[in-house]
Image (cartoon, rainbow, N blue to C red; front, side, top):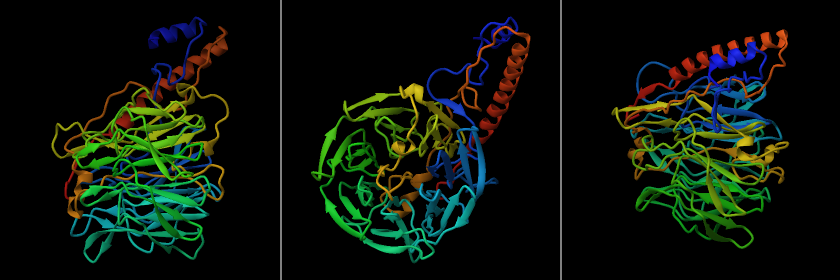
Length: 497
């Protein structure tokens, strides 16, 4: 309905929609953007609140907040973002591990563009709660592009790139922290050798963590390891059918683990394939492939047991130019993938959240490959309401954990994060930032508060209230569009950063 027609209908007392989303088409809806644009950031959900931290605000030299320190929290009830505190140090490729039992999120590791090979791994660790952000014990060793999980009441990190003297070193070790002041302790070494860009999934016994795939300097990995967080022991299990670098995995309702996507370096391609690991048999089974090959995407399990993947990239040479706006859902019962309506923005390294009113996606980066040396870092946030997924009734937040941790296997909990394909050597890590241009897909969908539909009954009082709501909605829509456009403008890249 045109805006003029909507206003006339209200004056005449006819039923009319005056939500800020009144003119939105079905599918993903743009909501309140993050206070700052972020890519290569970390996020986790605790108690229907979405914590987002770290990342790069833009790529390249110049003024502005390049590595935001503030931890932003989104509340779907108010539809607003607030700042709960600041990290001790802003950084890219930060990771997030959530602990619902204590309502806290831990952000271990990350990196800054620095040092002889261009990347300085960090041991920094921070902890966020509803009351603020405070330093947590540093990791035993600096690391980035590592994997994280929570199992047996412990925060767990493994692998990634660390530092040795003045250059980067690929790691095969792990660390655990029980959340007390005692700090992190060594947890042995992974079978299969060092790796980055791998994924850790806590099994439904709440104790064992499955480590899948990863990147080595000359190949993507098929090797799979199992970590017992109760006694800090490792064992090798059957390898995957497909080598995967920057793959994702998630625990299914029946206790099996779905592994999808990733980059495969022999030959270089973005994987469409998917496979399922059954802990009872220790074996892998190939299942139906995704519609799109992708890595650097995010994954979440829906309350009804299906699995949603969104965004990522299909270009392992220039990730930002291959950024995707597609999303799809896997039904493990039918073994089928279904494409969802496309997102408004193409997003490499987005983060997903399962909240009370739907699935959310935030941030990421892309480029159009038309202006050399530039990329677009996004502040925009989109929501896919449960109705779009055919889901009704109360939402069980534990059912939507995004790290595969068992919802009912205390003390295991959730962890959400992403990793990137590791280049062939440490100096080639600049692949993280070598996107060659910027782009944002335009959208006319208003942003702001959650969708609501109301009608008038023809009375003068209700008409006046409706007209006022309409004016406020349009005013906010215009303001938010201006703000979001500014936050998601193109930034130049320094490939050496």
